[in-house]
Amino acid sequence: MQYLQAICGGWKMKLYLLSLFVVLMFTAGSGLASQTSIQSGLKPIGSGEIRYMGIIKVYDASLSASREGTGDQILDKDISKCLNLHYAVSLTRDKFIRGAEMVLQRQHSKEALQSVQQHIEVLHAKYRDVQEGDSYSLCYDAPSRTTTLSLNSEKLVSIASVDFARLYFGIWLGADAPIDKNLRSDLLATNR
Image (cartoon, rainbow, N blue to C red; front, side):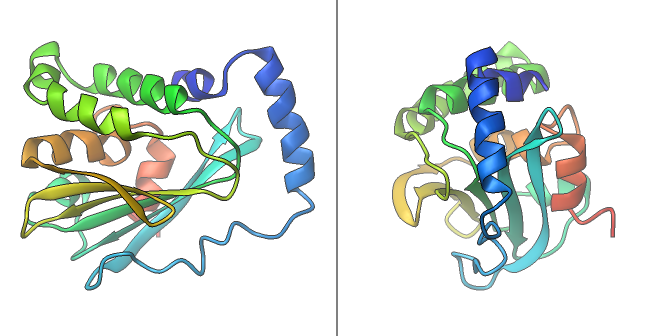
């Protein structure tokens, strides 16, 4: 919940998001269902959504991977994976950074974060504001050991670090204090 408050802001933002929610109720679906994996050879694993205060959808999420994995197995360096986030609201890059840092600090020691801090800063510098309908993709290619961030299929940055990939994908997929436990279960298809 703290993450969602960090990205959604104060009461003015809540009022705006509530108004947006009313408008979104009358629009078509998210478009995520027709989205295909951006990396060939990956198969769909699971999908879910993040809602602010249980009401306002922030984004739909889907996970594809080279093979299924349960729990921390999905974070294995030998499993290629792609996490797609399709936004239902507009958000600033600062809110992505603040939310990611909040979850990472909750999950990891200062020492663990410090070991990949340079990579985190590089990725965060490439974040852009999103509008309703935009999609971020965070993909890890196991053969090259590289994580790539894309916005609307435009590559923003690639980072070659197994440790960074495990840590950053852990925001959504890690067993220890993920962004949302229900989303993690849905992405890993553990509720099916």
